[in-house]
Length: 117
Image 1: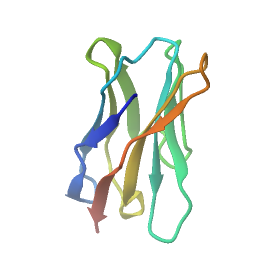
Image 2 (image 1 turned 45 degrees about the vertical axis):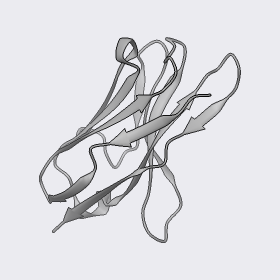
Image 3 (image 1 turned 60 degrees about the vertical axis):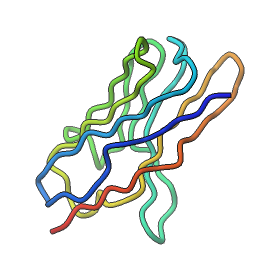
């Protein structure tokens, strides 16, 4: 059973930076798709970033140029570097893992990011 545990959230002023981490209890395989989603109060959960097995990435338009997703398979860890944070980035951020061979999806419990203006 895979467990994903996020860390690195917190309170930061607008324009600041945070780095989120997601530690997986099981192995992260090279074929796994990993990612980050977020959910703000009163809003639907939305995709923030994905990194695919071959290293290709994609981002929501709202975070392009400010956020960077990366992964370290040897450490079973996923990262999200968030720069130039804005109040509208305030949300609970969730780590996501998908194995395309088994079709299984996994989600972490989330970490709160709050950006003050």
